[in-house]
Amino acid sequence: MTFVRPAPLVLVAAMCLQPGPARAQSPVPPGTIDAALGIAWTAAQPLGSGDARETTPTGSVFRIFTASTTLASATVVEGRIGLRMTRHLELLASGSYGTPTLRISLSGDSENAAAVTATERVQQFTLGGGALWYLGRWRTGNRLAPFVTGEAAYLRHVHSGNTLIQTGRQYQIGGGIKYPLIQRNGGRLKSIGVRVDVRAVLHTRGLAFDAGVHTSPSFGASSYVRF
Amino acid sequence: MMSLSCLRRARKAAAFGVTLALTLAPAQPAFAYLKFGVRAGGRQVTLRWTQTPVRYVVSDASVASGVTVSDFQSAVGRAFATWQAVPTASISYQFGGLTGALPGQEDGSSTLGFRNRPEMDRVLASTSFVVDMATGALLESDIFFNSAFAWSVTPAGETGRFDLESIALHEIGHLSGLGHSALGETELREGGGRRVIASGTVMFPIAFTAGSIAGRTLQPDDIAGISDVYPESDFNATAGSLSGHVTSDAQPVFGAHVIAFNPNTLSMVAAFTLNTQGEFSIGGLSPGPYVVRVEPLDDADVESFFSAPETVDFDFKVAFVDRVIVVPRGGGSGSVDVKVVRK
Image (cartoon, rainbow over all chains, first blue to last red; front, side):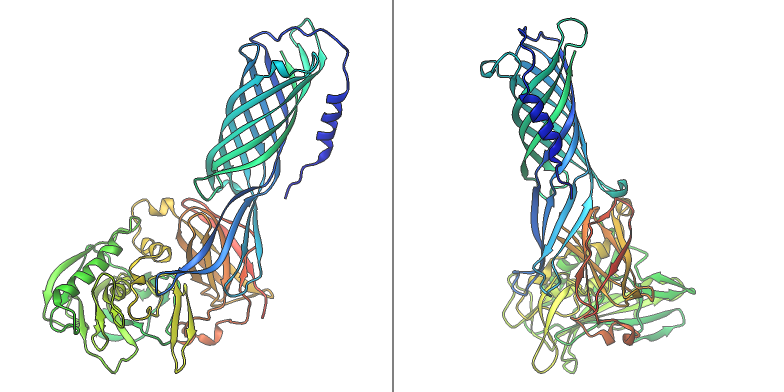
């Protein structure tokens, strides 16, 4: 099971709070590119439960045991490239990689087998795109840039030993802030900063044992460079 | 693969017959989905039809009270159609007409018919085989239904009467080469025998109570079995297998019942550890993550199942494997080592 290490988030938060030198900020022109690399922690996602069952003479169900499946909370590494289209709109291409743990809890056995949680570490890849909208009217000061974002991604789960691949879709909606730590008026590199955000992660298929949508909260922190 | 030796009778040097019975209540041998095997030409081969469609005839010589020949033919026809409809299996059957012959006569025809055998007061039906001992191929298989019992052919079943279609479905599984499955729960009856509480397979050896029609639907264990014996062209490339061995105190456990459960499809397919190394293998599985449960054989008469029942190990607790087992497409899971604890 992977737990988030709080240190990076705390560090990022501290960096966000530290005031930078006051400097008039001109609007970011279209064509500007933000490249970000960071981590995201996603809470556990229940993937459904079901019974191992047999049929009684009347056609009703006899439960042998119950299996409840969860994708454990995990931290993934993610990268994102954004292309500023207008003053407010940025188009995104993104990808992530992590190794969450699939947990299947087995309980309620008809012959009193001890409850067990069977686990497996899987590899998870996403590749997708989306849009980010800067909330100009919510800006506080010249540097803090709040935004909302929505992304859709292809989801790929690879089981141990690359023996089996399950695919699905992942969607993320949320919002956050970008905060430049270093800004330059000239040159190709325009700024370096941090981005933190909160999202709802929705995914379908992949490891999920049904066609439903499975939702969990996620927190992300990354560093970006702006060209 | 298990060799069958019960009721062996010689027809000629190249063939022998065996009989399997679906019983009313007594503890009977319980095979997890297994292929029958015979030693033919000095090697162990799977008992199967080498030519399809399998042609069968229906006896009109004797039918049970309340069942017409037409009813009988229709009921067994539906049961054959159910097996034939398995999309991952290639076996097919063909009705060859009515016959005046009775089942059990070695005449080259696979005959389904009633016989009145009141002395077999716990046997609803049985299947016999004639096998080419040079190749292991099935030559003939007859099914007899015991008209000493009351039978039903109505769509909804009838109280106090055994559903002919359900029983035929089980026997046709044998006719096709499948053994019994142990995916079922029973309880002992006062006065002997067992009552089925629930079953996870048509090939469970003990029938549901009279009036039930719950046995008309094939279960994943049955489908895996028939598909393993008669795989469709791409079945072996798309299905996978799960194998390993069961030990207790570092010693192999013989006769452990191993269930593979797919939490995605909620299906169960099972097998036994069948050798002195405690090894098991479950084939015909759809690819995906599985959990494994191991239990002692406690719902059947072990002495009639294993040729050396004294070697069957019952002294361990039901247990789950604590890791998810991945069955890949067209391949094996890798060895799953299951350690069980003594009671």
